[in-house]
Structure formats: structure tokens, C-alpha cells
Image (tube, rainbow, N blue to C red):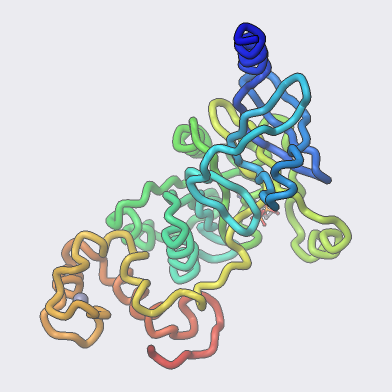
Length: 305
Ligand code: GDP
Ligand code: ZN
């Protein structure tokens, strides 16, 4: 009897493999295990317990039954698109068309920090860039990796690939900056629709989007941009300082524990403005914290809390 149990366990061991869910449509999940791909269903256990496997989940599957047996603990979950275990957000802005907008960039960086996901910055359409690079300096000083590139000319693509290697990446950023064009350039066989936004929106209404993970070299990339519909409005005023990553070393050093780094005396953050903190980023922080319109779109002013 003991032998039989051992044999069964050994058989299960042989049939079990770990993999990554790259796609999930109608209860069928595509699981990539190294060079092999399996289409699996979620076992009843999950359905009963109302656990839904997500794209990005690392799972153990039974290759014989083609079922997902267990989900590894998640590092994080992005709600929009629903993807688990994101390693890195590639916040994409255009150098021009649409014009570079620091407040909008800060908004996406704040949202990434809020999800505790590392961010890098991509400045696409660098082929159209005419002004000086000064506007990008605050971000380099803050410690963000920043890649200047052009999906049109191919400039900087290798550098970006280097940053994406071995990670699960998601692009974020406003419409029209070239996220789809970049994915098409980076991922062999990708055919994201690019260009005219209104035409895409019209078409989009009739199709349900399921985020899918695309393989690129030694890494992965989600085919749907992240964050676009999340709102910084939900973030409490006192949380913003921790979401400006270069402020973090100085938090807790102010005289007042509840310091908002605005009008307070003996503020360790303010002391660093012009030193470790770029004045433009500090101004931007104040904009978010006071919820001033213009920093992140056109929100009406909100009372300070
Ligand atoms: P998305 O909304 O961020 O996905 O942007 P798209 O990829 O659809 O690109 C919007 C428009 O910008 C398209 O017409 C692209 O052809 C164009 N575009 C994308 N990348 C570049 C670039 O590097 N340089 C130039 N000049 N145009 C680009
Ligand atoms: Zn302070």
C-alpha cells in the first residue's frame, strides 16, 4: 500500500510543472513552462473558493489533466489590466506630439510607486525632440532610469530591451505617445493597433480586452497599458511624500511627524530642495498634495485634508 502511495506521488511529481499564465479567456488559461505551452482549466477547488487565476500568476499545473493545481503567492496585482506579479512599469511619454508633460509623468510615477512597482521612464519620439533635455533632469536626479528612444527610427530600443530583460513589464502613459508602436517594434509577431485614437476607441467598444503577456527575448511584456484609468484622487494627502521616491530617505527626519513638507518649520524634505530633491519635483509634489489642477489633468481643486 505504502509503495502505491509513493508511486502515485512520484507520478504526480512527474506530471506537475511550474509555469506562467500568459493568457486567460473564458476559463481557459495559457500556461508557459519553459519552451512548452499548455492550455489549462482551473480546478474546481479554485472555483469554489472563488479564486481567479490572473495573467501573470505563477502556477503549478498537472500536464496530464491540463489543470491548474495551485497558484504561487502574488507579489502584487494590478487591477487595470488585471495582471499579477508585475516587475516593472515602463512609463512612456513623448518628447513631442503630444508635448512632454512633467505633471502627467509624475502622475504615472506616483501610481507606480503606490503599487510598489519599480518604474523606468521612456521618452519616445525622440526623433521629434527639438528643445533641450533639461526637462528630463529632475527624473534622472530622482534616480529613475531614463531611456530616450524612437519607435520610428529604432533609437534606444536595444537599451530599453536591456532594462526589460528577465522581467514582467507593463507599459503605461498617455495615449498617442507610442506605447503600441514600441511593443510592435520590440515583440516579434506583435501587431498592436497604432495611430488614430478615435478610430481605436470606436472599434474598442465592440471588443472586450483581455490582457495578454507577450514574450520578448528573455522577458515578458503585457500587451495592454496599465494605470490609465486609475486615479490619484484616491490617494490620501499624507501619502504623496512616500510616492516621490527621492523624498524617501528624508521622511521621518522632519520636526513634526505629520509634516506635509509645505509650510512647516524644520522640514528635512524642504532642506533638500535644490540639493537631493529637484525644485521641479518638489513643486510637483506640492501640486499633488494640494490637488492643484494642471498637475495631473484637469481635476477640480480639493480641500486640503
Ligand atoms: P499609443 O496610444 O501610446 O499606443 O501610441 P501609438 O503607438 O498608437 O502611436 C501614436 C502615433 O505616434 C502613431 O501615429 C505612431 O505612428 C506615432 N509614433 C509612435 N512612435 C513614434 C516615434 O518614435 N516617432 C514618431 N515620429 N512617431 C511615432
Ligand atoms: Zn517635512
